[in-house]
Length: 293
Image 1 (spheres, rainbow, N blue to C red):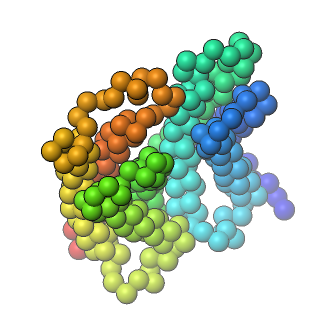
Image 2 (image 1 turned 90 degrees about the horizontal axis):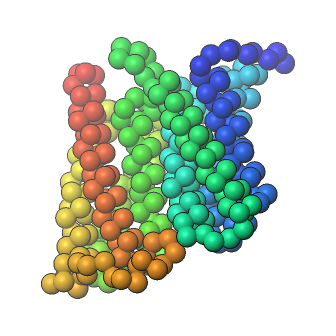
Image 3 (image 1 turned 90 degrees about the vertical axis):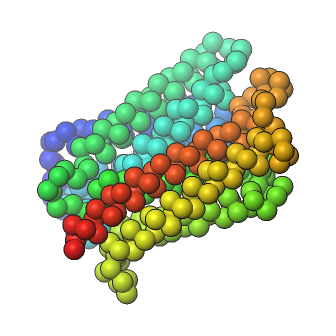
């Protein structure tokens, strides 16, 4: 089996991302002394990114794109976008939990600093890969290489972060309005994830209705749902009239990581961010329908 080596900016960017993510999790495992679930999450982010990038490089080196069970126009950039977001989250979470206020041995701290630096470098490398791979105006490319496709990746990733904050401890079971917000997050996440899977698996042609019109209708529904959640979540968590707490408790300053109030605020901010992403998605999807017409 012949090896096909295309020396291009995309290849070297992927190779750099592979090395940076490998160093990040190797150093953390070797000397970082990670002791709870947050550390496991960071290791997963780096190891998953490394493994996926290795697979992409091997497939391209051996020219196996046509034999891959996924759409090669959509899979690499989809994975790169997820890897960028995973490494970005690890670059934020890791120092927050393992460097902030750490008074341990200097050698231990140095290992953790190295992991953080290489995590940031991996994030930059993956963002560069996405920038190189995304569709240019007038270029024929897969849906996931376009702005709406990349927005779908960001929307699902932010929803996953919301799920993490909202479930540990459970923050949505106090009143029915908060349960409604949780249902909004779940419905939009499931539909966005399904769209990504349809595109990566090249199954959009199997739908009994035009894919572009479905995207536009779903984007409108998601905007309306997230708009309601953006209003409801802060009201029932930060308005004293509805049992909320406006001021940040003083105990939050002594808590490692994020306290409950911080998580409530993080969910409120991320809900607003996802609303903006879905609004941009709606604009792009509507343009897609008109261009197709």
